[in-house]
Image 1 (tube, protein in one colour):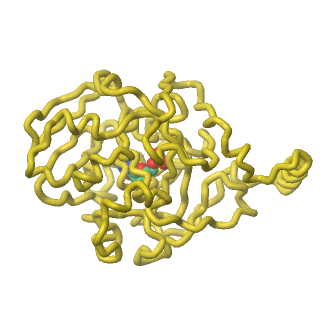
Image 2 (cartoon, rainbow, N blue to C red; image 1 turned 45 degrees about the horizontal axis):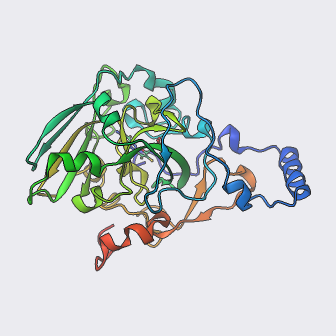
Image 3 (cartoon, rainbow, N blue to C red; image 1 turned 90 degrees about the vertical axis):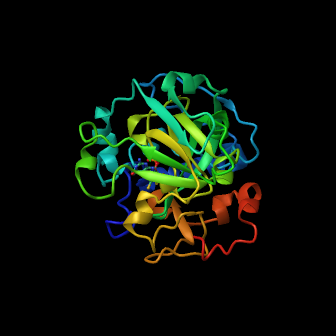
Amino acid sequence: MLIRTPAPHDPLPSEITPRSAYLNRRAALAGLGLAAASPLALAQPAPAGGGKLAKLPGARSAVPGAVVMDKPTSYADATSYNNFYEFGTDKADPAQYAHTLKTRPWTVSVEGECAKPGRYGIEDLLKLAPMEERLYRLRCVEGWSMVIPWEGYSLSELLKLAQPTSKAKYVEFTSLADKAQMPGVRSGVLDWPYVEGLRIDEAMHPLAMLVFGMYGEILPNQNGAPLRLALPWKYGFKSAKSIVKIRFTETEPRSSWTKAAQQEYGFYSNVNPNVPHPRWSQAAERRIGEDGLFAKKRPTLMFNGYEAQVGQLYAGMDLKRFY
Ligand code: MTE
């Protein structure tokens, strides 16, 4: 994100559609009377997972806005093109190196400004609330996006157990940073551990999701096993992976990215096509897996398309100042 000059990334194998295949597909769709983006295609169930990890199905979420109509990204793309700097800065590094991450036993400590701090084992967290499947857009600050079926539940289910006090204005999330398991942590590319933060009302919003799985299976290590956040209206870097600590604070947490480049990564980081990153525009995005060479960029939507659900959290705020 910060370190490498953002250039359009090299196309994934799945993005390079041979011209013949592309034309055949168009012809087949035309024969069926279907356009490429027909509602029929959009209504199809989420694609299957890789079949190698334990199943973790969720019931389709009833939270408003939790299931978008976009076509889901393939499992192969969602698990091979990742940002997880603890395993390296190349998009292919996490899939290659994250097998060294040990996800059992795993404990998350909940602490800070709350009446009931606690330590939760991953098995207890898996049972804390009914598993839901939500289809969220994920927009990376680098200008690409995916659509991922996540398994989990609202983060508020865990936060409310801690009974945050009136001093709890923010929530800070800390990822594991273990040099023995995570080769990237031996480098100084970020100030480890990876830290992110939310205002408490953002963290309590029903769309803020605590995620344990994707595509009906447990999370692959490269996607942030055994638990991570998914915050669909914010740039992807706010969704911390492999979380070990959640802390309620009175003051705004300093995230790793803000520490690395304050002018480039603000605390809010809501997806906003009207606020360019200092070094590039945020007005459009490339959807990973969309017919590569022929695909036009998509316009990026305010709050990543979740304005109806989350817009009121920011009523009256100057979003150019609070980027
Ligand atoms: N969490 C940690 N701990 N380390 C990271 O490097 N990268 C972030 C976010 N969470 C990151 C992280 C960024 S930049 C993005 S875009 C998303 O994870 C990517 O999630 P995905 O690989 O599941 O698509």
